[in-house]
Image (cartoon, rainbow, N blue to C red; front, side, top):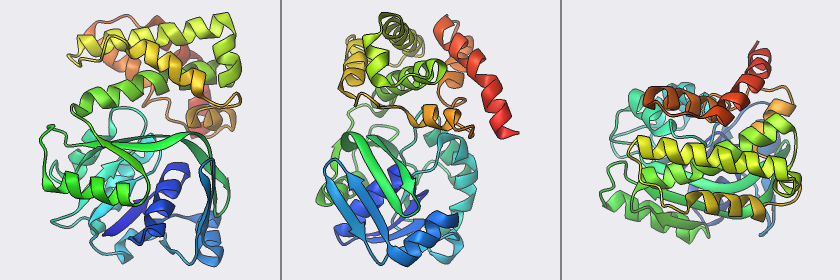
Length: 307
């Protein structure tokens, strides 16, 4: 299968290396020092499940040079998806599938608005990883996995083909019975963990052991659960309990990518996570005071980073 990894950060880099190791024809879209390091020395993953290197790699900054591919794995940050959709157009042919792996719930629609509904598949992943230095990805948390599903929840050949390709690469992959439920299940966890972590500056170990921050996590997840029900998304009744359990399984020093970006003064996924909760809550008439507090505290830092 011809595959393009659009955005070779912690997520795209990890899964791209696994696919390339399995013999798939993978092209990495990257830029800057990261791209130059890959072109010179390949791409390495230092992971909890082993260390992997692909060298040489096919890597470029220009999607227009790649041609049509069978699958595009979208690994950019959530706030970059709209621009990425336009940039990847030269790689999208009649049989191309586009698989987003972003945090938040907006990416499938953003891609479909630019590329049309037909090529877009639903996708999400569970992994804590980041670029530790140019040409190197560090995997530090969660047993990496991907969940996929058609946006209309209908089975099909392309779903089976992509599922088989990911499984053959050693990537734990499941097909969601209801993709929107799967997407919101992750959203409940990641928006709450990212927001409380970024607001307090604390890692997972302290967040879950400090009674005050643990209560904030719980309340933030409960707010998203209520929002999901108001929007007719039928999350399981134990979703908050499972979300807290996911925090309890993180490494003691675990942080979200949003928290790391905000701490470093970089643009973050605030608008796609806590900002999206606040926006949808206003639309649905749901009170989300915890997320409003998180959003109001972090918004000035986000504006400063984007300036």
